[in-house]
Amino acid sequence: MVIAGLILAIVAALIHVFIFYMESIAWEGARARATFGAADADELRVTKPLAYNQGFYNLFLALLAIIGAIFVFTGSLEIGAALVFAGTGSMLAAALVLLFSSPEHRGAAVKQGSVPLLAVVVLALGLLL
Image (cartoon, rainbow, N blue to C red):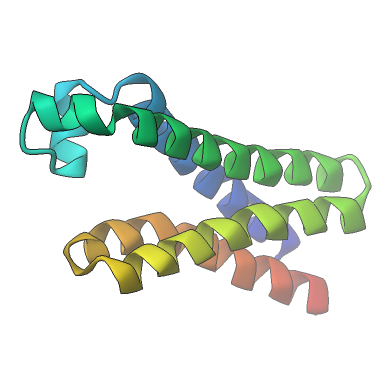
């Protein structure tokens, strides 16, 4: 079960790396406009600095989860699990903030938070059992 939790954490990390890409690299592209519901190119230009910064938050959370998984796979269970929980737990917390603070983005919050939630639950169960 620990392996399943780590796989879910890596999937969550990959999702957040993609979010980083969309927010920090491809923010003004058509796909970002469609994904984030931006009205027009002017709105994207104005919000670009905020999205750029937010993208890096997502990247750092992903790195925590990936580095944690590497630690677990190389034999440092306690360090690795702590890092995975820090990364995926923060992803989940951010999704909950979005869920409760922005009704129009609830779908995105569910997409963003589902895999981290599963990772946290499955890894915790794996460590407890």
